Length: 168
Image (cartoon, rainbow, N blue to C red):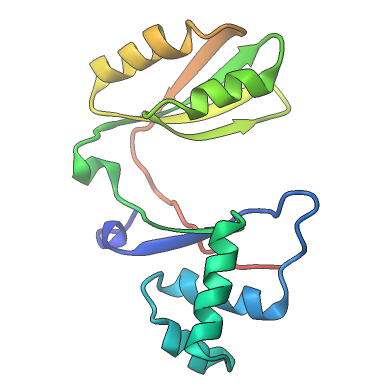
């Protein structure tokens, strides 16, 4: 992350769950405005896309309530006291969603995905140091029912992390 990245808010879109309507052009325009600056006032978004401030506020509320969008402050873990990040690949047996849910409930885990390929699940952990990483791996993750093996990929340097992919 760039030196200023930990001061900016980023807005990420998620694919709507099945049954969610696709985003219309107005919602897409709002998302893209907020991805440029998550603190942009509703009035200036409205001016840019031709809506009232109240209409923009209502749309943003609907987008966040439905889980299509979240507005968060993204920090650089190193600068807020977490010096060890890692991606952990897991090979599992049984119901993957149970293991994924258990991982997602852990405070150190910030990302969980069910994958095809060599691993069944990938999760990213943010830890204070190597001792903390070992504790999370050994006492929390490897002891979960269904986890057969893990492989840990320790991050040495973060070169790119963006959330600005826009909308389709």
